[in-house]
Length: 272
Image 1 (tube, rainbow, N blue to C red):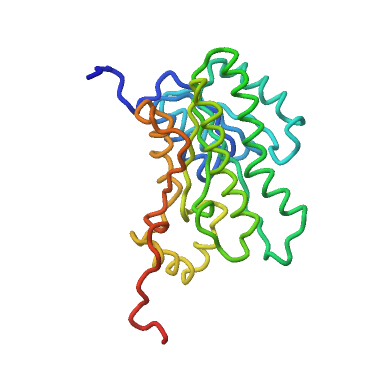
Image 2 (spheres, rainbow, N blue to C red):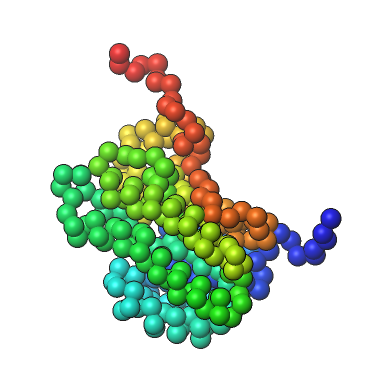
C-alpha cells in the first residue's frame, strides 16, 4: 500500500482559478479550496463588498487570494487574452480550473427569444468551453497535469416545465465534461463536474421571500433540506484532490436525494 504523508484532501501547493467565484456556489468552492490549502484566483464581474468579503475569508485561511475582473458574457476574444495574461502573472503554476460562472434568465418556451437563449448558453456552456481550451493548451505545453471542475445542475438530468434554455445548457455541461474527459485524460488532465440541486444563492433568493415555495421544495427533497451553497465546497475539494484521481468525466449530484426519488408520498391532507 502506498504511504503518502500528504493528506488526500490537502490542496496545499495548488492554485485555482474560479469563474463566478465571488458569490454563491463559486464563493463556497473558493472558500473550501482555500481552507484545504489552495491559493485562489476569483474571476468576477464587480469588485464590490461581496467580492471583498469572499477574498477576506479565503485570505484568513493563510493562502494567497486575488480578484480578476472579467465579463464572461462577452465573446471570448474580448476577455481571454487579458485574463490569461493576468492569470499567468498572479498564478504561473495554476493547475486547478473551476468553470462555475452561469446564469438563470429563462422564459416560458413559447416566449423564448434568441437573445435570452444565447446569453444562457453562452455563460453556462460556451465561456467554460473556451476558457478550458485556452488553459489546457498551456497545461499541455508546460506538462501540467491539471484538474478541471464544472458546475452543472440537477437540471442537467431532471427537467422542469418552461426551463428549456437553462435545462438545455446544464445538459450540455454534463456532455461537455464527458467529451473533455476522453479528450484530455490521456494528457493527464482530469475533468469532472458537481451538480447542485436547489441551494440558497442570489439566484434562488425567491425561496427566502416565499415560505410556501420553500416548504414545497423541502417536501420534494428526501432529506427535507434546501441548504446554503456551502454544501458544494467539500465535494469540490474531493473532486479536485488526489483522493479523486480515478474519478474522471463524472457529474456528481449534490441534491439531498431529489434525483433518486421518483415522487414523494402526498401529505395526508392532499386533495383527492
